[in-house]
Image (cartoon, rainbow, N blue to C red; front, side, top):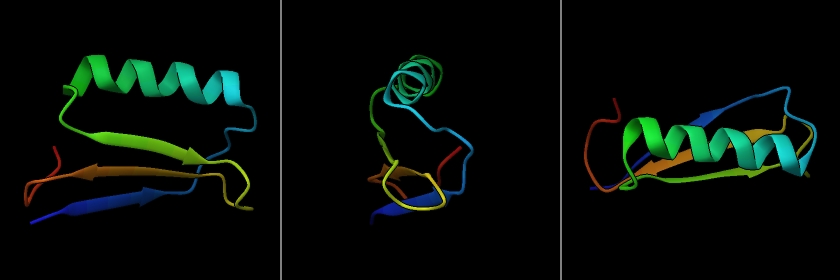
Length: 55
C-alpha cells in the first residue's frame, strides 16, 4: 500500500528544494520518493512511501 503525504511550503527555488530533499533522504532513508512542485501556488512537498505509515 502506498502512503502519500502532501505539505504546503514556502520554498521558492530549485536550489533550496534540492537541499531539503537531500537532507530528508539522509534523515529518513532513501525508501521515500520526495519531490517539490514549485509550479503549484502552494509550493507542494510530496513524500511517498510503499508502506502504510510515514514516520
